[in-house]
Length: 189
Image 1: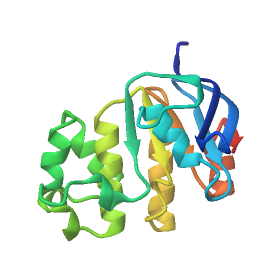
Image 2: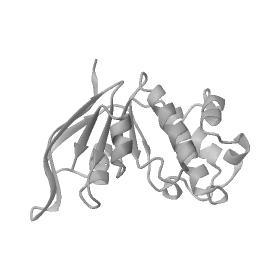
Image 3: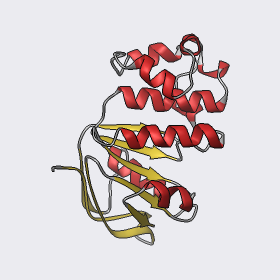
């Protein structure tokens, strides 16, 4: 099976005197679920920024297939003056919309709203909905369930795992129990 993510000898710091991490190696294939854990400020979210190409490493390389991301802060992932459904339609087909709405326990009417009209948990589930509808090869998940209650959190994680036949997933989490429960491998930074 082809790799959808290949990170080799990655080193990053905001200066040569302030290295966050070095010699980071990671590969991911469709069907794999891996987690990145570590203390606050260790560089977990920075790894995602490097994968997305928003930051440049000091050395090493990152190669990734079609990516979709769920951000930790759902309010920053939607434009405030456009409805949720319009922001989803801009980037993804809606052919599986109802299936995901049911799984994520979202009402279709909520998608007609502006982002600030939704609760944090609703908006986080809308962010997951958008990411899944984009049909990525690689799904990056930055604390995707932190705004959800425990029951919905479990439902969402089970739904994500059921879709591993279509993609690979890389999770950032502080929740080591969650990482152990869902991951094929845990990478500590």
